Image (cartoon, rainbow, N blue to C red):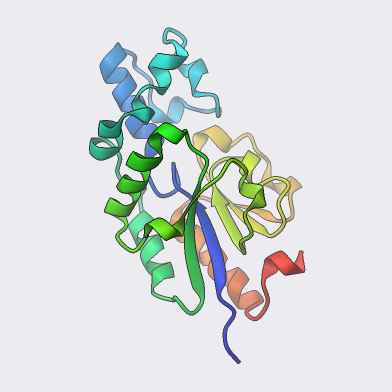
Length: 200
C-alpha cells in the first residue's frame, strides 16, 4: 500500500531562522541597550526596550540588509529540513509565515539562501495559520496553534514558556528541532495511512 504523504508546515521566524538574537543584537548596537535574547520572555518585544519607540524597535526587520547580513539558521534547522527532504514519499515541507508585507521579499530570500531545498512555491504567507490545512503545524507562537485541527508542535522559546501545553491534547512542546522531527516521525508511524487532520 502506498504511504500517505504528510504535509508539514513550519514557521519561519525563530523556528528555521534565528530572528530574536539577530534583532536584539541590532537594536543593542544601534541604541546602546543591553538586552539579551533570553530576556525576551513575552511575545510583546516592546516591553523589553522601554526607551525606544515602536518605529525604532521594528525598523530592523523591514530592512533588506537585516535579512541579508544578520539572519542565520536556528540550531539543527538545516538538519531538520534535510531529514524531511530525504523522505519525499512521506513528507512535504511547507514554510508558513505571518509577516509584514515589507519584509516578504528579503525574508523569503534569506530562507531560500540558507535552505536551497525550499523553493518559492513551498512558502505560504498568510494572516491566519489556522486556515491552512496540514498534518502537523510547527510554530513558536501558541496563538497560531490554538483553535486548529490536527497536531501542533510548539518550539520552546523564552517568550512562550508561560503557555501550558498540558491543557491541549493536540499541542506538544519540543525543545529542539531534533525533538520535533522525532515527534513527527512518531505520529507518522503511529498512523501511517491516514491524515491526522481528518482524524481529529
